[in-house]
Image 1 (cartoon, rainbow, N blue to C red):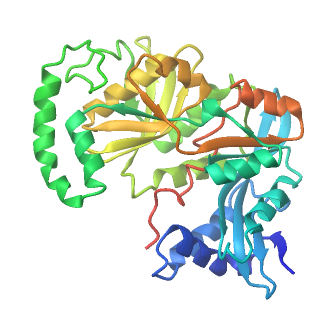
Image 2 (cartoon, one colour; image 1 turned 180 degrees about the vertical axis):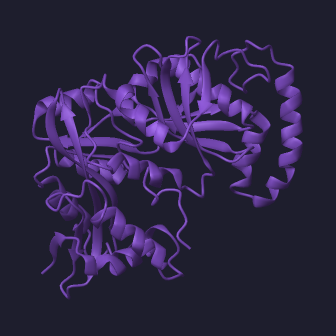
Image 3 (cartoon, one colour; image 1 turned 90 degrees about the horizontal axis):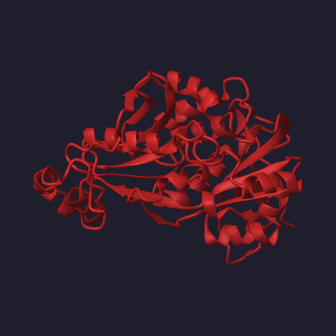
Length: 371
């Protein structure tokens, strides 16, 4: 008889092995660093709630055949405290012999005591499970966006992902981009790239700041959201510490955006190495300032030598992104589940602060190495 129960300390090596076989390299054993991180992330992280945590799926012989990663996140809706659960990795081994194991894990998770459950990385299969269990997909939170800065370098990077030898042409692509961008008018708005001396950011300027300074800006830049995190003691700081370490994506850049008057109107965090496409984890902006923050971020990325930027949408940014030569695609869905229709309504209306640091993409399970 199969069973589902909360994750225990003794389960960590088996869960790490499962993660290694399904998401990483099945030819190699799970490194100890991966086991250590899973233990920290799911059992020792600030804000840990023993009633809202990961679950394991057991086969008849008691061995672990499935896992669903869960992190508790305190939130508020119009000052009312809520218990939220962020759903991460859902993995099941040997699905042929037990095709319903994943559905049982999901059902058990959604039946927990939390007021709100959500995920920002739901595949089509996972999203279908959520909706069958009365979850809701949020289209405005579920789009990925891309902005090209250096077109030839951007294309070279895409091609080299499939054929590594093409990366040898990166220096030539960079030189050609310099010539191409130099011929663009400083105020041009092009799908193909951003001009060399682009004036689009106007009087707004992005300045590099520390991780701790970024943490201090999160509360004032998110207070306009009706539904938002109420981080447990030390939780935001540890989230940003983990978010900083994504070796596959490049070094982290934390920036604030200031108006000419010196007032801070926004902030952003992205990862990238020079010449690569940066991955934006979070954009924060005061109401009415999203366009200025986005432009300042693009200008900073262009000055830093990036070939482009990519990230995930939030409704508060989506309107400002329209008309800025940003392309959109759908790779995964943000999904929510709540028994209180008022919580679901806040999510559907776009007044919830979800994704990024209030989601899963900050975790080192995405973009980090554990060799």
